[in-house]
Length: 115
Length: 114
Image (cartoon, each protein chain N blue to C red):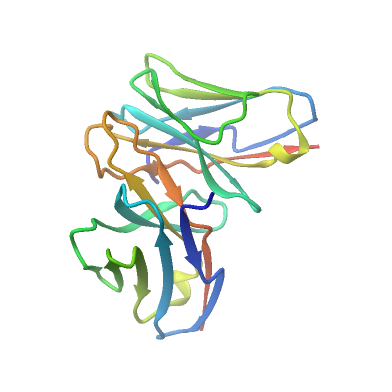
């Protein structure tokens, strides 16, 4: 059962363009939504994260937009650069009691930014 | 560099064999998570340990087991290996004290079962 659906699977953008990756979740118990960036041969690294009580969060060229009623969130990369070429994963985490807080990941989006 | 280390980087073995993957969390982190990344299944949570105790189980096969030692390093044991177990195995760690804390991922161990 895929609890976090991510699209598109791959994305090609020209340098300077806007990259948009979308995710949708099903479980309303999720209360923390991070995005991870993964380069080939490396582990995922946290890019930006948002809580559901906030509709938008911006860090530099990266913005998360969050729509709680639609159970959707998206990553926008402004002024995309060739160095942004990587695989991006959205994720969600439940605020469980105790310390059980594993991430549920989307299927990933391979972003290619053309020079 | 996330501060999480994993050994070995690469592992090639045969079906039916047993391997052990090792993870050292960031200094001070009490929680360790294991994830499997494969082409068809994506990134999937396997198991979490917190300060030596198992806290959560995900899609972990019965042939797989893990433990966290008093010095907080963790090992993932994979036995009776099958071709389908070939994947990247990541360890992540977090302080273990907050609801929305970041998980820091290691560089992974690439397992190839022939």
